[in-house]
Amino acid sequence: MTDNTVRKVYLWMAVLLSVFVVSGCVTTTDSRFKREADKEQAVKNYVQLATAYIGQGNLDRARNHIDRATEIAPDEASVLAAKGLLLQADSEMELAEQSYRRALADDEGYTRGRVYYGAFLYGQKRFEESRDQFAAASRDTDYKDRASVFFNLGLTEERLGDLDAAARAYKRSVELSRGSAESLLALSRVLVANNNYSAASRYYGRLTGMMQRNSNLRHSPESLLTGIRIAHHFGDIDREASLGLLLKSDFPDSLEYQQYKALKSDG
View 1 (cartoon, one colour):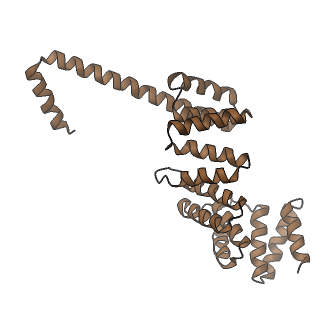
View 2 (tube, rainbow, N blue to C red; view 1 turned 120 degrees about the horizontal axis):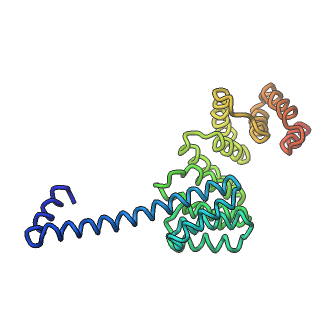
View 3 (tube, rainbow, N blue to C red; view 1 turned 30 degrees about the vertical axis):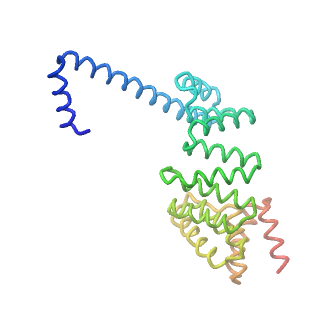
């Protein structure tokens, strides 16, 4: 309703009633809406603080904020999902799952809660169920962090052994994140595992280019071994050797270094 229309409605009501009655009604309505808006904002603030404290490992403060949010909106999906996170952090897995399920029953479109539940299921090694939750979450085009949803979907597909599906999910994560280092590495690694070395080399090249431009980015054992495998496939002996030396010097006790030695012994 436009401002002009509102003015006409109020004028018409003033003719039939008194200005004082109309003013009283408007004040009451605005006050009610304000109270409801204040409650919604309070719940949002409590949930945000609680999840931040959970991330920091400060469960007592998180619990305090969740209790306050629960007093206002005990059946709100965001409150139930945050409560699930807290219970999970307390190793109350059965109660945590109940809370996640209640959150999604209250609002099946609450994507953040679905992401929390998918991560919970992944941690329980229930990969098919986890995959289904992340797949559903990935269809929410309004969710702000879709790149991480597709990354998690790729992880579950990889654990289920579907490398093609994992590569598709990681590629979408790369696209949505405009090439995050994490997604580029995961995609490169899966493409290598799927013997698609040409594509792996392209994405790995983007990753190493980012490393050269950003001094805060460092090689991990995984990134070094991925580069070694690509170089080995294309017969780039110098590149393979230089990455192998980095792996040996920086991560001599890593599983990846053991795998590199096995790769060398196989010729």
